[in-house]
Image 1 (cartoon, rainbow, N blue to C red):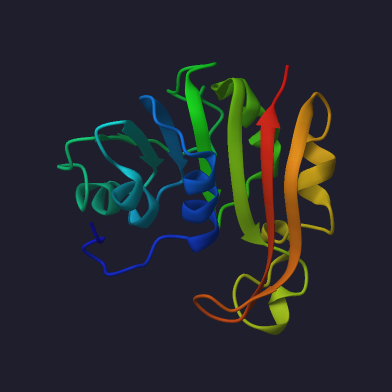
Image 2 (image 1 turned 180 degrees about the vertical axis):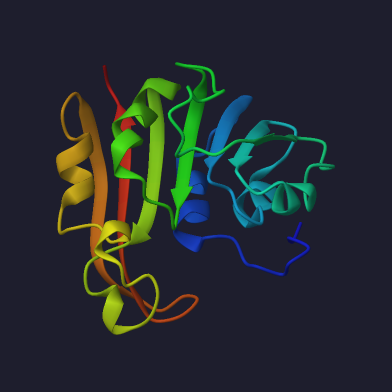
Length: 177
């Protein structure tokens, strides 16, 4: 299924999830889901998606899909997230960075669960937005944040050309404790 906004899903995440060949019913959290390009593509009878975003208009684009539950919530407030701890098998984060609560993501994963994180990195300012250093990861920042008590399965920091030329960091982390 394609998103109504005709955005393609994030190839790296889709391919990595296929490689995991998860056949049982799983819970996936699409964190800061935006227009739902990944939620819509991943939803299915064995994949139940929780899509959380602060923009109710964007969530309304795909809240009618059978295997997608949407939550309208500003993830950058001081309020506790309305998300279940140790509940999700997979969390995906694409093009979003909010450092004050980033480590909390691991508390939402079941032991053995996977965090797929992809967002802009330093150097992206040479190709377009974001340019603000508050929204650009430093080299190896995802590894440094999530390395303690988890297994880093893959890491990339460099130029990508899928949607547009940009500098991104990608990290696949398995929760081990």
